Structures are given as C-alpha cells and as structure tokens.
View 1: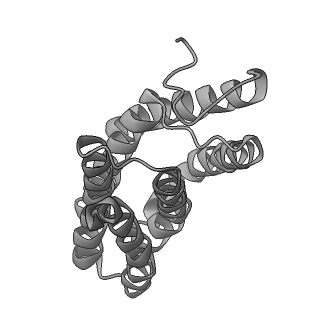
View 2: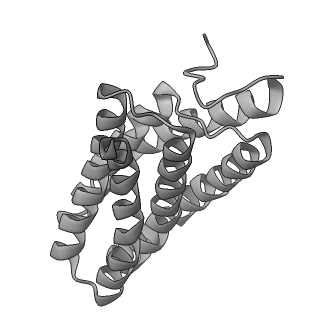
Length: 178
C-alpha cells in the first residue's frame, strides 16, 4: 500500500536537494557539489524506474518530476556561473540562448498543461548531466560542449514546435515525428 508513494518521495527528496546544491555552489565546494548533483540525477532515474516497473505512475508523480527537473535545469546556468565562470567568458551567448529557449518551453508546457517527456528530452538530460558533471569536476571540453549544445537545441526546439503547432499534446508524446 505505501509503495505507491515511493516514487513521489524520491522526487520530493530531489526537490529538497536543490537548496543544498545552491549552498554548495555558493561555497564553491565543487567536489561536494558534484557528488550531490550526481545523486540528484540518480534519484531522477530511480523515481521513474520504480514508478514504471511497479506500475506506480501518477499524474502527481509526473508533475513532481517535471517541477524537480525544471528547478534543477533552471539552476544549472547559475551553478555554472558560480563554479566554472570561465565558461561565461567565451560562451555566455550559448547559455543565454538555451536559457531563453528553455523558459519559452516551460511556459508553453505550463500553458498547454503538458510537461513533455520526449525521447529527445530524456536523451539530452543524460547528455547534459554527463557534460555538466565532467565540466564541474574536470573542466570544459569544448567538443563535448558543442555536442551537448546542439542536442539541447534540438530537444528544446522540438518541444516548442510541438507545443506551438499541435492541437493535442500530452506528457506521453514521445517525438514530433511519431
């Protein structure tokens, strides 16, 4: 009976980790930050896996997941600025482009009441996680950055196009191609 709450509890844990991540980034405690961020992303995978495996999906769970995802994603440019300010010296415009497009996508998702979980969003979430963990822990790899940037442009752009042009869109929509 109580198992049905496990995925949501994991999501709430992820939400509770966000202030800790902000504090660690503010302190510039890069090692602890990387560990906490990796754990945050791991809980993102675990809550969805548990929900799907045990058929515990819920509308509340999907909403909590989207809120946690968006809170982490909106925080990332600021964490990058705090922990790797050198990225902004040369590539501030890439961060600005992604941030503006992401906010447009979030507004459309809210307006359409359709938090998207497309294949492109899922793939780029993992790519972005790997890129940022590497960047925070080791430093900037420009080839990795450009691959991640292009993938994110596609994923966010796909969502904006679907939300702006389709009559019906749901959180179960997997791609604009199918």
